[in-house]
Length: 170
Image (tube, rainbow, N blue to C red; front, side, top):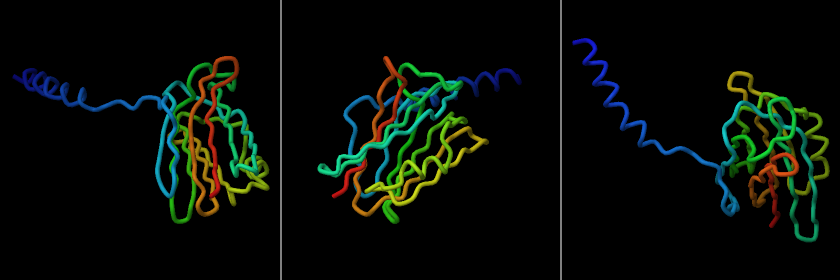
């Protein structure tokens, strides 16, 4: 009788788990976040590394681009989509928070991040933290008011995978 109850519980649980939608990589056209909003992308894996960060600016178009190079767990180039990430634009104060899941390694530290963002037209302050409990890397960037954000991913084909952030001033 005890086994019948366990079997019934398992059978009842199966349809519930099938109804939960899985999050997939955002491959379509990236949306522009204005005021507040969020987006996500990437795929889960065995672990990832933040290999590099580059910042470029086009002052005439009032756009800054941040390119995050994402590698595998050992820091080698990653083919395909980057690891799972979640980007949230908050309104008061205006702040962009990017969380990279399964990313316990980074070739950049908080000081290097602040140095690379020095002179930015859109970013006023940065912070970076590695969370050893859930193996995530969190980047926080305080933005100037009325900055719009576009976040999208680029699959690694010849080079490593990337997460790209465009900051657009109004």
